[in-house]
Image (cartoon, rainbow, N blue to C red; front, side, top):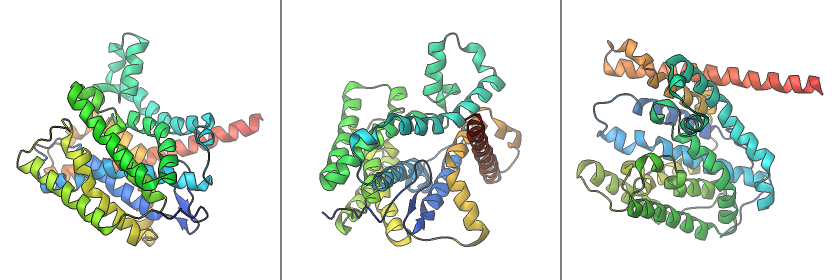
Length: 353
């Protein structure tokens, strides 16, 4: 297996990935499309058993996980094959976690205050439980993702080290660990509320992203196998009532389902990695892609406090378009304001020094 050239790929931590050739705008574009799909799927549909959901819309979160893995590998290369001690240096890890928690906390406080949910919190233990399990209303509309991302911050450095050293073996071990996790969930009948918070159901997706980020190749046979197996499983699960004995929760985004999307993402990176959409539309799409965490947080708030109910008179598709536009505008504005807040804090620290 060819070792990646450490001089040809690098990444900033967080949401921006760069290389020696410049920014990889494709990452922004994919994330922008995926966050729109997330907003669409959280609408109160009568049913989601449409082909658009089965084969496209539900794949948004798995693709986000692949991109997280890609970012992790790119950061690893930028640091020139760091040791585990360097990868687990406390300060960078804390900064990544705080990057997630600051906007989350702002909207958590706003939601709890605006809806009066804080009145039902009896002790600090309950407050922390609600906070880390995705917020109020049982973490509806994607609240599980916070703990998943925090977990990824801690496990992806070790995964990157393994896959860099032993790419094929590392990928196989992560797939096996993912399947083993699902088997343990099935055998122990783990509660679904616990299952949803655990990123281990996406372990293989993160590993594939890391593998791709290192520049390793998947041969055509593997890509065809993944696509055919995933497509077949999704079709049988959604339309022929097949139920896997291993994956018992969230079957249409479990390990057997999500392998379907791997060839699609892989081929996008193979043929469009250096693509850049010109003009204002490309700039807008890139900004949306860089603001996806803030958009994601806002759409949770938007749906939980039922602001969209004021537009219930609209046609379904008009309502969905409105929800997407509002969430994108507010989320991007939130990201911009928070970025300025961070810059202001930095300036204040410099002045104090």
